[in-house]
Amino acid sequence: MLQRHLALATLPYLSIILYVFFILFSVRIKSPLLSPSNTTIALNKTHRLHHRFTLLIGILTRADLYDRRHFLRLVYGIQSSPIADIDVKFVFCSLTKPEQRVLVALEIMRFNDIIILNCSENMNNGKTYTYFSSLPRIVPSRYDYVMKADDDVYIRLAPLALSLKPLPRIDLYYGFVIPCTSLNPFVGYMSGMGFLLSWDLVEWIGNSGIPVNDTFGPEDKLVGKWLNMGNKAKNRFSNKPAMYDYPGTNGRCSHELIPDTVAVHRLKRWDHWFNVLNFFNVTEELKHSKLYNV
Image (tube, rainbow, N blue to C red; front, side, top):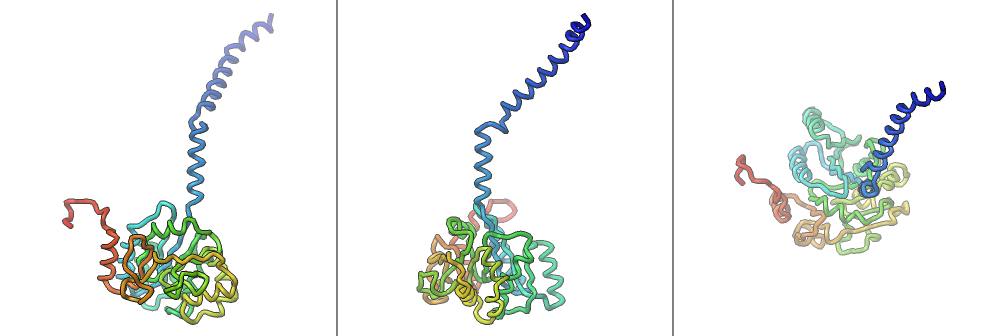
């Protein structure tokens, strides 16, 4: 009799437990987070994110060229790519003047887009070597690609990223092959206007004994020489005619502006810059406002 009373007394609690279990089980089965369609969406997002790549563009310039940097910040600040995360940094050697220490410090505080190398300012005496060899030690994380660019070149980031999308992520050497008339990226070297290396080659430059013992001379030519001596850069790509010198500035390396441009070099004058920016209609997304009349 006592056992019967105990069983009857526990029935309400057992019912509650079963009901709670049923609710939890039902919610788990019907949860949209676990539905096949949403699982597919999550996997697709992961797949897309995995295939994004990262690129560092280092614009080699000089500390005193404040106006040039501010202008280039406008040029690159309005650009982006849906398939790549691109960082644009200004690269120069050690500061030498009191005013530089103040003004450059303000730039760093405001924009955080400056790399100061441990070297004396130069063009063909090791600056490019110092740039590449220092990166693995000083950047917080690796990039898929690293580019060296001049401060008189206009790079269109979206077309650049599209041209890189199908290319290998390792052992890659990309740019505009010299001599100008050549279409063979394995003969000659990539122009200093803007050439790109995959991260493994950047690390190799910092670790190999070949570059460190050969740093005096035309920097772009030296990089090609290093890679050849080290039997590196099995993957090479010369992006002609999308990369070129501004019309009329450099003979066979120059041609007229074209819609599929990736980079235009030798923009030495403001009218050159105006013509290029106007050709690509860079202000087309400017929104109308009562605050300005342009």
